[in-house]
Length: 197
Image (cartoon, rainbow, N blue to C red; front, side, top):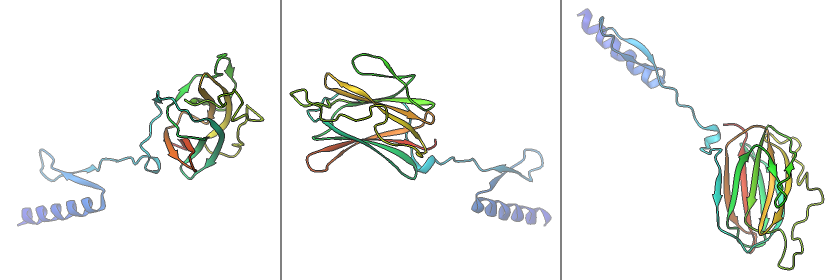
């Protein structure tokens, strides 16, 4: 009789613990009374993001021209947007030990503990060589003071159909790349860098 009551109590306790997500009863080999085993911890990705920090590339070339660079803050990430006057095509984005200028290869000093070299496969000048994007301050394209992840956005130049930027980051963090159409005939090359892993 006591054995039956013990089994019922054991089953009831197991059901309560399972419902609460606290653990399960695993039978002990000798006594058969059971031991409490913790439920496996399932770590949710930050803000539901499943991004990584490895290089992302697309070799396609664009006929569009770079016309603007801007940034914004979001709840889970900081965002960099490169505006083009036509459809965006290829790009290369990767963490590097240091960001270098297009053409010369000279290093660009950046604030932060990690650095992203970002290249969009589109020039920042028209067919006559006239700039379509010519930032007044090449070392501070946008003001990112107070951003959680970004520390600095710098221009690395436009050379032979490629335009590059340097992004100083608080730490090596996951990122995603998106290409979005609009406004009008233009497009946007978007890089979001998460605040945390």
